Length: 343
Image (cartoon, rainbow, N blue to C red; front, side, top):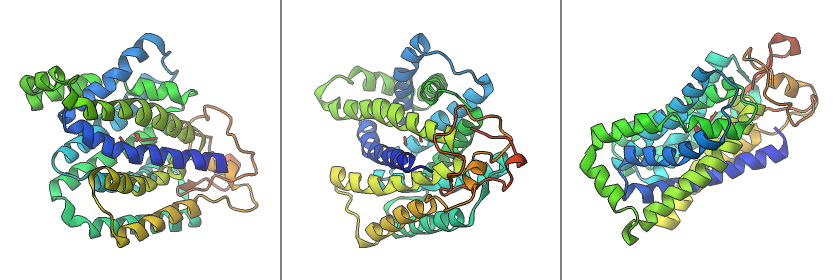
């Protein structure tokens, strides 16, 4: 992966890490399913009016929206509403990275290099250390709900790469058209008209201002900027090369939650967070010599890449994800969240 793209992946990690305290603020006023419905409606309306639909099969577009928009955020918001602290939520949701590696191996036939296996393994072990250390901070149900959200993100990651959209921003906007109606139905069924009416009726009061600002951050920064960059990276590199960068999100999420809500991290969390960063960055370092980079963009038979990769054929795209077959002729190039991603 090029240094510029690694910086972009790190920027997404920062944006999504800050998204967790923003979500916690929004959930203080809006119930979870209503928050998701409002979030995606604010994106869907201008998208339907002004943005051309990506030239990809409609079913693939729906699958991206189901994974990144419905499954990820329905379960994440439910978990946080059920008591999952925002810092711990940012950690548990990063189970999406190993989930993505597994799904990409099964459905895209991507393969891991030795460096990627070691790097992802180190990062996962560090995340596990943080989770064990903070296990007392949340009951079992919020953790399980958040893990289900992580699986939804992983499904969206693989679906995004498989979609092969030529314009990642258009894909980001159009998958946001999928969740509003299902989320609105869930809000009416689970949360009820009275709770919805109260939340919307008081949305422009002074008491709701922090929640409104949190919602704006979620829509404008976390979704448009975060998922726009994320989709571009997934269109260029194997999904399992990009996905492990999401394991950097909890480092930002824990620190941001500390600053916003006083969720103080201790020495174990700080040291483990540093190991996560080191594992991901080490695994994403280019391998000297060889043509593995070109092969890495031919990880499966998923159709052509939507755009010419920004790196040369002799560079590598190793990252903490699967490598490509050794022979350039062994498979066609392919063009996930993240999802995504409130990520």
